[in-house]
Length: 478
Length: 112
Image (cartoon, rainbow over all chains, first blue to last red; front, side):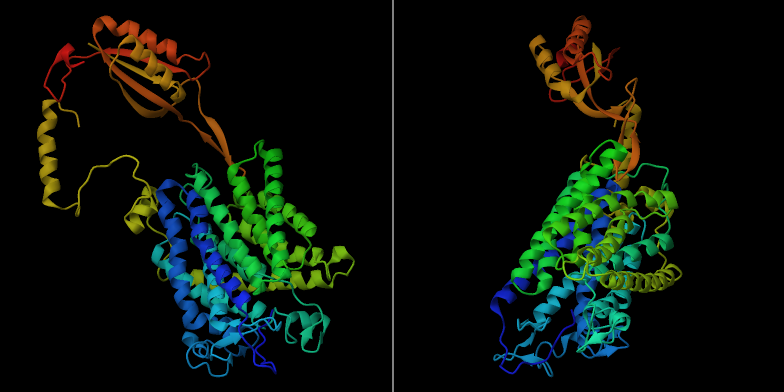
């Protein structure tokens, strides 16, 4: 998956179909984050729905800006530093990608173009930037589900900027930017099983981001849930989803946007992107069934929240594997993913960590399974296809490496923020509802609560209050 | 004058309203309520975590009537709201000292 920037002999030109396809896919991936906001928002209690959704929208604000300033340079642009990170200054502010694109491959109109997979399919490099920007946003937003209802919004925004810089960009660089976890001759895979002609003999499989996005965000969610601590009343009072239809709508939007995520990662409208589309669909369908079967057997009912969660678990699991499996292999992968995640969401009660919306149970578990499962079920190199265990070993190694890296970085950032800005809102605010305390809004106005424009200290209020007091003794009920 | 208050199952409200209209009752107030009696609550499961919901949704119906109508109106509500299953609700009647129609200022029976 490493970008190849070598100019070809004939002057390269923009591939119009690929460009149109990736433009649409980038827009689809961007839609996933508002979809996630609905998915998460419906699962919280009514008093914290807005804060939950704002954590996604806040991540959009911070990460989008950061990505253009130094994110792209650290992930794909700048020269490699130790196989871990790109130089943030080399393409700072997209220098060298737009305007005077010095050193980039240009088409006849002077547009910087890129052929990421060396397949002679060229798209504008700025489009690749935009596509990747949407991935960075959704990854950060995913983490927010682990710390619902209780985190200061300002601390969350600072965390978003630090985490995407210190955890996401490095992992993206390592896996996709030609770093340690890629198939380059300097990568871990090449160290394990050797390299031929500058590429590892056993190429790691992570088509659309099982390691970079889901393991990365999943483990970050676990670490952050431990650092931030439990919600007041966790494990005692009922914290049930306040709006299940929102959860279902969010899951539907995530699924729709995920086609851009997975099929779009081929960066071309071709046979493989079509296979990826079908694999993404059937793995998700199977995961719904996997989750519901576990629920029916364990709890006696197949639930809506279970079906929506199965959708997400299936999408997560197929993400790394979608380009390497057959549709039937995808069904197996999805079925197992749904069942595994349905079992994993109970772990938080067993171990007593408050991963509020199951970022660990869904994204980490399904992300790990999808990344390892790709080694088992890949039609070329997969263990179940009789091609030996090497691919599976490589998959386990890249999964664990990204997991450990992200856990350490998240712990450092999370603890640093805990002892500086602080993570928690006050207990009173948490009980009353974080929407009021952090955003001065409420999600629903089902019953009129009276009121007027202006602040509570206006003279009108004290006049009204006095008037009200005068009336009460006369027996007029308020 | 009497105030008749009935706590009924939400999906019985149409039947009760039609029965009261047929009897000649021209107005009523309905509000959403929740609570439990012998029915108790139910349990719900979200991602494997079970929650007990104690309060069951009900509708609270209030009708002001003349003294002579009170027991028959209560009977009308009873017949229309009854399903014979647990959770059908309760009806009670209390005396009312005065009633005022806000638009006209009429008082007492005139205002009903």
